[in-house]
Amino acid sequence: MTAHVRVPRGLRLPSDVVSDAGRVAFLTDVIAGLSADPKRIPPKYFYDERGSQLFEAITRTPEYYPTRTELGILTEHAADIARVIPDGAAMIEFGAGALTKARILLAAAPVSVFVPVDISGDFLAGEAAKLAAELPDLTVRPVAADFTAPFALPAEAEQRPRVGFFPGSTLGNYEPHEAAAFLRHAGQIIGPGGRLIVGIDLVKDVDVLNRAYNDASGVTAAFNLNLLRRINRELGGNFDLDTFWHRAFYNREHHRIEMHLASRVRQRVRVDGRCFDFRRGETIHTESSYKYTTELFRALAAGSGWRLAETWTDRDGWFAVHALVRA
Ligand code: AVJ
Image 1 (cartoon, rainbow, N blue to C red):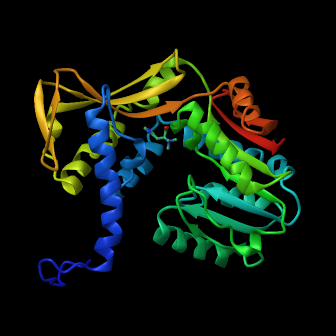
Image 2 (cartoon, rainbow, N blue to C red; image 1 turned 30 degrees about the horizontal axis):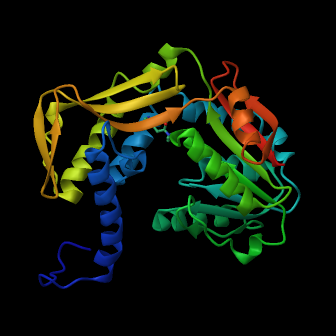
């Protein structure tokens, strides 16, 4: 809603109703998460506009290797990856965003129909229109949807061999049992004989991992703390950002990076009129980012109806792009 339009108090516009549904879900998850022990908030709430910009800034820090490493693998092995994509295929990208990674595959593979799926519909429509103008022979059919829930495929993607594309190690944000459920769900959408190309961050030297989530310029800390700013703004919270600090470390036992917001002091915080008490040092667990060896990932895929057919990695073995075939 633009600032200069005066809306009488109490008059609700359709845009308020839409954003209300999102606010209710956010509030419900925050209240439940801050009432739990240990406290936690799901990482999907990082990505308001400022959070999305901060994530882009993270990918440009020297310490955060995943994005540039995956782009390198896709570029170097585009022709090999293209060979697992059948002629005339429909490619479905989960959580599509700016389409930078898809462009690399689309330039190399015989894809006829491209279906980028993303929750932020306006941004997606703009990116899809640009791509369609660049590649006139490709049919581009964006779908604005939460890809973790069932959604309808456009008619053009039916009756074609289907390939899923899930880059960025986003799968690593799920708990392993949720990742298995997602892979099974993706198998339903993609159908018998379908393929899935998925980017996964690999288990590696602990210092490299810890540095990637504790960049010297503090962008990751700002990204983590922005969640409290968002709660203050959207949910009427009164978090004092100066009394929390960003804490990220590799948990070897669970092969995951954990991000937390730790309270510097014993304090009481209010959100939407409710009180939450923090001990000094108590944390909110805001993200887990699981790392998989290729063997661990093969087992996860096999247990979810997929056979690991091929793997491409960088020289250092820091990141993997896997091709899965539906078993
Ligand atoms: C977008 C989920 C892949 O886990 O590395 C980056 C998010 N968090 N730095 C990741 C993130 C902190 C990122 N993923």
